[in-house]
Length: 231
Image (tube, rainbow, N blue to C red; front, side, top):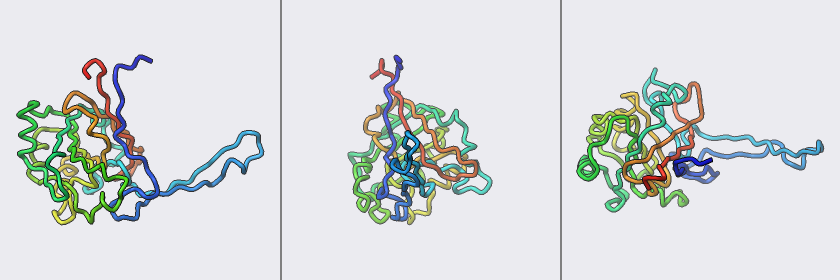
């Protein structure tokens, strides 16, 4: 098939030792039935998964923080396919870096105002530590967003926000980004991978979480689409 887009995987693989919010990982699987257990001529391996909903690259729906808010299954598919905007702050980042309004304004000075219905990814470079869970978690010391930055992004009427850290918030800040975005009916994607492979503008994201009817969070396969003719 001559598909006109290159596909970039923005999703971390789930393993039994991947970073997680409470350091327990919360993901495991085991074989309920294995190949050698069958004598039917066609072997099967059947697996049982156990995991937290908010594991790996995952989505937070409004219901995560807002009673009566939309669940994962109720998110509008039209909002889960959106133009991607990648704000790269990786050259400034340290464990205490706060993404500020100036970072967004500098981006817009170079690339133009963020368009309505965009999905914004904050690329900090922190995903380089994904295979080092202790360093990635770092006792909740990782790059995050200032409240004023979240407010500005909401003024741009974007559909959602992604970041390559555990969260756009840190516990000691009181979760203002979650309150603002989920309170506005938007969604958040945490632990984004490979955003370094995306252009600042011009690509699309496709976010497909598990369709959990009452789910407040869910793992997802997040991919980006880049027009081959524009690369």
